[in-house]
Length: 153
Image (cartoon, rainbow, N blue to C red):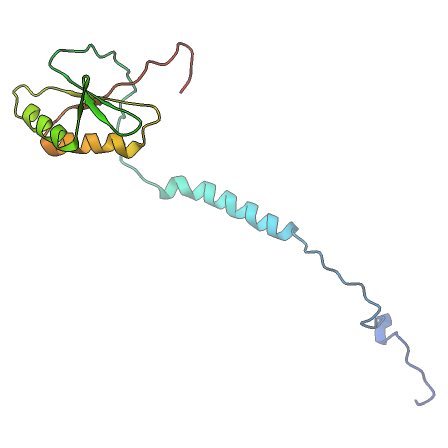
């Protein structure tokens, strides 16, 4: 047995490779990962409609109605800097709150129409809505520019 030389071949014809001779395989086989992700996607697409239940209601459809300005309506404008105007008169927050409280006591109660500048931050318009609601105003609306014919959204 001492005369026999065992080379790189072991039993059964398997070649033993030295660590220095094997190339490094640094690539990851992503095919199984993609297969698993596609199967999971299909499972989720099938199970989500079954899992999500909602009460059947008939939602209203969008209707844009032209509002005819009435003399008794309160028209407020909010500029980009947050200044609030009733018609052409600038109001402070306390003056606005007092005016809204007085309008809320009227019977029938007038509607409040708010015109906000396009560049006005949302919270500035929200502040006016909050003051009107705290005063007890029931109808608050927003005045917008009519869309151009044929434009979407």
